[in-house]
Image: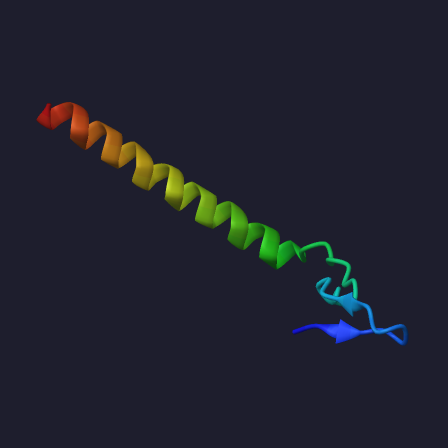
Length: 55
């Protein structure tokens, strides 16, 4: 999509969306993120140990 200004010049710059500031995660969200990180760590550790046992 493009626009033309009043002088007839082409303006093909992207339209910038409005800025939305992030909110700090709530304590429940922080606990959930920590739990997900712990599960991911256990999963990766299990994968590494399995690959070492097989190889």
